[in-house]
Image (cartoon, rainbow over all chains, first blue to last red; front, top):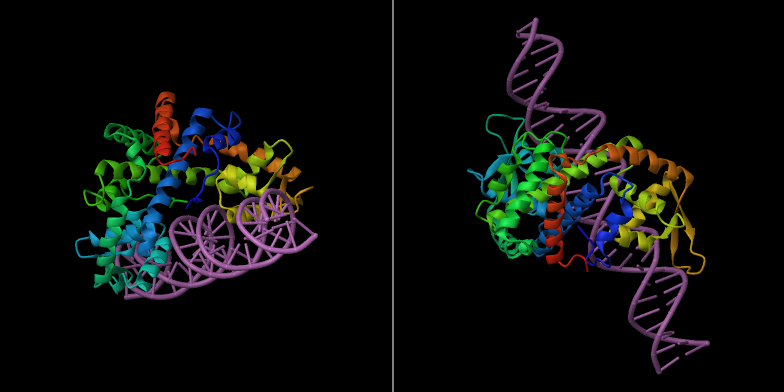
Length: 166
Length: 166
DNA sequence: GACCGATAGTAGGACGTCCAACTAAATTTC
DNA sequence: GAAATTTAGTTGGACGTCCTACTATCGGTC
């Protein structure tokens, strides 16, 4: 989440904080930009979802379950797909369940495993929320399709160099 | 913060979650990549700072104060420079003060204002922490200098289109 | 000089994320 | 087949972020 108002030039932040003091200025500018853009995106999506009583994290979980074959997944798998710590999954499922959007059901054969199943209310909520998310252009309208692809490619290089895509 | 292990291909996440269901696939791939890279960077910096008893947020605050002219700033200004909600500044300063790295002092003329001043211990901590942060290459070694600049430029376009750089 | 809106900061609460430690169950090892 | 190891999930605590609501103070207006 980011403050609603941004009463200054964020570029000044990078200069003030990093300048030539820490690391390569070029690198730090990129780091700061990524941090900032992520904030912007997160904020935009959360704002769109708030009227629907969802956060981005919970929306992602709902979408994940919706598009799963059986409408249910083990919590462990949810954590893998959403790149979340097991405790974060517990937290999110707790809240979704409290809202009646999903429910926990025991795994038929593995008693360690808990399946999370999307409810009918959850399906309806996802539909409404998706309309809101679709209406957000994610502030990426500043880029052409080719530039968007270029951005993704550059970020993919970073991820690869960081051992992502394990 | 991000889980230490990432036992799957994050690209699959974008496909699973978004596919052609929400928005333009190209755009969503970029969004997902930004979210992910931010996670990676945040995680790398936090890991480097943990041995020094700092988080990235607190480190930023410390650096900001260190490079200020008088070694002190009003909390309001800190919030502007760091793009943080006033309550987040309160939180961070609380913790830094508890560690003896900064201290609150009253503003000489405006009694509403609280100045936050870096202590000697704070200066020493910043130095040690900066060495740790400098050693992190932020996973951007996957890019050449030119590519890093290209990345920053693309992100700047996004920020501009989103009304950043107010 | 007395209001009254704007400003600085804090308190309390929600949320998402992590880690460490724990329980329960399955799997592997011997 | 019993013991050790691994795996699934939860609990409790820390942290950072936000929002709403509040107090204290400043400044401008009348």
